[in-house]
Image (cartoon, rainbow, N blue to C red):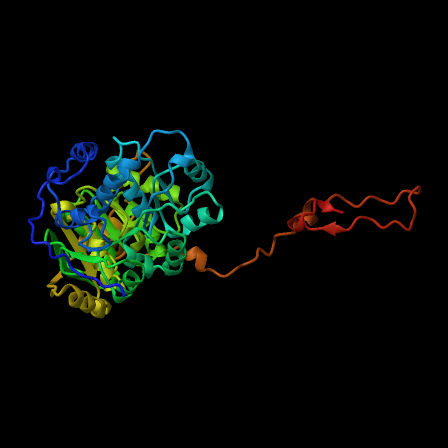
Length: 482
């Protein structure tokens, strides 16, 4: 029976990447990325992975888990690296599974950067994109493959990938994969792999289901934890504002204007709500865009690139983005909707305050969110101070008010606006003409009676059995006579 144990080696942990027994090519790539000091999960996990142990790694999101499992795998595959053009010399030796497209793309980008000075080949496959370019890349041969479970099964069924020589398997954010129903897919994929392999399971949280999965597929794994499960980063300032449901959008606009947040991810609970909120923020003068599961992969990548460039201030996203987005030095996130699942709160606010940077997490809570907030407080073992938020009603009314009319010269007319414009909400425009009942004109005649020419008299040469053309109203498509 497999058992999970914690490492008991009393030797001091390494502090810098240069302290690790890594190939100079890997150290060079790490140095070019600006990495010098190891994070806690990296300091604990990398030496154990270099020894070939199965590991369950638990750490807060944004603490460097990708480097913790990528660098040891690259180090152990380097003796097999070659520059041959034959695809047979480049079988898949390491498989890294991620729950979302964004997370898979993020892992692939980091992996490619770590391996850029080596002959090892990397590839990434996920859904929402054309399979043909992915097939061509896989047929050329890759040693390291990053994939989402669904698309990987597509390639297995298409026989464009062979997993019989896989030596390393990584389940990244495994709890999220279970949350979105990937357990059957994971079991199928693991059934294609050799029994003799090293399996690594990394996640920010460990539920009982995840531990049962680890007991089934990991061999005597070591449990590496660097923080209390479900803990939030100390570098993130968390604020909860108590607002009414009808005031949430005005509160969000006011917070975005009052706080120095040049970029922010705004989390909502539904795809429809994401699109509506993004359009509303655009009308309020805030550059915003929505990203959710209904968007195509090309649209999501385009939106994400624009956000990273700073062209978008507010990225309105569902929880599909909570695990996969890695924005360097993101100043803050906003929970426009309190998440249904308390663990999602940890992952949402983990998008900011990454790698030791400071961040701000704002939550807009309505009275009906009391139970969800209590679940979050119980999970993270912290009580929130519900802060009141005074909404500037006058500025909201000015935004909602219609523009002043202008005369023919283009300058405002000097007449005062109706009093209703200065209230808390814009008064609807009213025209009494639309309230009048229909009044037919007694002198009006049908157009076909007024303009129709006289019916031609029957000619003697025409048979008396032929009837004259029947009159049809122009309203019904006629032209006077038929």
